[in-house]
Length: 280
Image (cartoon, rainbow, N blue to C red; front, side):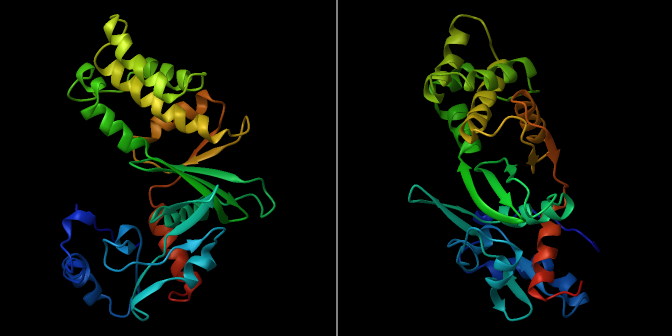
């Protein structure tokens, strides 16, 4: 890796038609100093609200499928990595950007063999992705609106009145209790009300309630996966979320491997090489 650059410019920070100018502002100088270097972009830049809509590639999909479906904005120079789609019970699910992270993680944490049992990865966030990989190909995935649900409950539900302005440090005992409760009968909609009743009966308050809520939602993700006992899970998460998923997975009996921080860059590099835009 020659250099890195980061800027707080999300999807909503770029006005309609402003993507070329935003790209030039962030990367024009570097590209001018390195003429001929191909550029790949991944994530919401390829959505309908992004620079251009990159059609989804269907699962199962490997690196070669991604490489074949690059959307070239400037042939040979600038392209968008397609997202992926899959269907369960007739309902579509989609991802943009996470596929690149997954393939990057697989470069650092390769599967034992093409015949290995399906490997599970989780990418926590606003919309968490649980991804199944078999033989180096993404076979299916599920999206859970965990982060968004937490924010809505945290800020706009009746539970918000019980919670402090800031989460504070994780209360591990309360978090663990939330994860365990999520595995019990009753369902998430029932379990969520316990955040209120625990406060009403002075059995928990403040940060403990926020941690309990977090544990309930993350625990519901794990419950919904119905993973075989002992199946390992690779976590691709920020420093804030990774410890929570590690604790929850360990409590449910799943060994955890952490993906490297540079999974996105590894994934983009792997796509570029398979597409033939870079030499090995």
